[in-house]
Length: 185
Image (cartoon, rainbow, N blue to C red; front, top):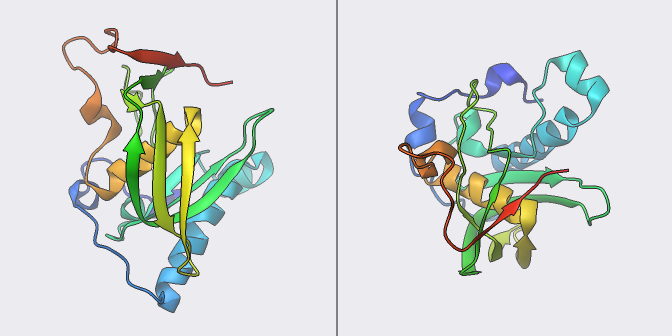
């Protein structure tokens, strides 16, 4: 089971490295990685387990965050009144996106960043993605809102990009052209 001690923090070189594609069929090690990433996210959202194991709650976790340079991440997002999203994405890609942008009004956070970073992170409002599941089956999904924002955040990790790289340092709360603010419940 992944714990907070296993998650590398900002400044670690794994967070600034472009991760390598995963080959199929998955090795036992890669299958375990997929399972462990999703398990952490699910457990971190369980108040009892979060306290018991000292887990910081999160909605996504990428392999580079546990010092594994592979193109894999997990998302587990449960929002009231919306269909839950619980996926492992292997070799994920955005195949199309909206012109319209969005951003979290509360800003983004990251399990690898132990400080508050203020500012708006511009993201595409709607994306169509393609990825593989751990069984090697390719899937395509259309995502919007928090699902789209989180997918882009995790995909950035696979490319050595941190969320705060997108924030305008001179004016962190400046209006983002053609963007609809997204308020998290």
